[in-house]
Length: 328
Ligand SMILES: NC(=O)c1ccc[n+]([C@@H]2O[C@H](COP(=O)([O-])OP(=O)(O)OC[C@H]3O[C@@H](n4cnc5c(N)ncnc54)[C@H](OP(=O)(O)O)[C@@H]3O)[C@@H](O)[C@H]2O)c1
Image 1 (cartoon, protein in one colour):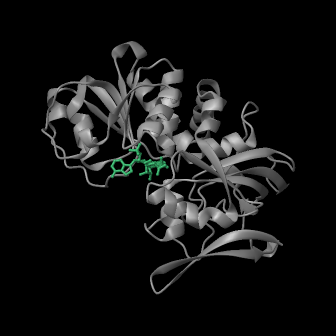
Image 2 (image 1 turned 90 degrees about the vertical axis):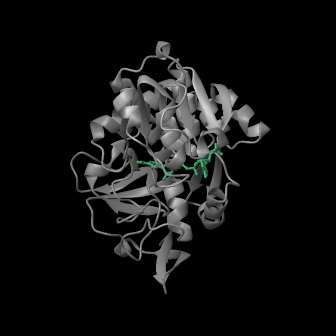
């Protein structure tokens, strides 16, 4: 017997229950993993509370991340005892996710845990950290160098944002953090490596199609007017990697920044990404995000606390990263 958080839907409402399961209840798959940790991302919070249409197969165990140890494998690439991490691939959306003490899944989805990253830290990075790395890699592919000028990160005190700030700073970029943070949270952003913290209200309202050139590059987790204003304030040939919709899924912009300033907008989706790219993302995180900084923005919650923590995350009462310890 093992425990998992189980989501069902009744009369259009999501119900989350911590339930006992047997191995026979696990979905088909060639590798069984004893899960140690998951993490709580924005998407998980939407799924668990039913406040966003994340779950596309009912009933389901949520959790888009998991870190654990292979218990049994029919896949020659994996053996019992291997330490693994899984992010995305539909976990917690269409596939049994990580808010469980066990999972059974395709060997194609597993990544060997990089030796320099401990299981708890891998969960603290989770999808948020790995997505931050994908955003940074898109800007690097664009050719953005630290000497080109400041790089903006929006939603900076969130999971993706705070790790993006730390990773960019670790790589030598000058980082401006845009945030609704209070003074203490702004101080945390500076300790992560932000050279400047600006009020997110500066970017959150409708703005002109082209504005004063400010940033050489940007990572946007907010969407909506924030992303439109980011595009309008990027420097000549600048680029933004857009991954989120914390302000909204709309994009009320004009083509002006693209056709008059040569601005490039990169879309980031972390769910279906080849494993080679994932490995490079983790290498970047392991090398350039100091673990003491990661731990300073991460807290631990038990499986029993996930529902309350999800409401806190969506209502802005929880910042940074939450590691889910599935054994408590
Ligand atoms: N595309 C992908 O593959 C992918 C992967 C991971 C995450 N995401 C998306 O990226 C976004 C961030 O994810 P996360 O896990 O970092 O979430 P999170 O921890 O909840 O952080 C979101 C942050 O956005 C900021 N924010 C909240 N409401 C806002 C508003 N009305 N206007 C502007 N900013 C606002 C807040 O930061 P401040 O207080 O600092 O402003 C908040 O901490 C989410 O939309 C998520 O769905 C996408």
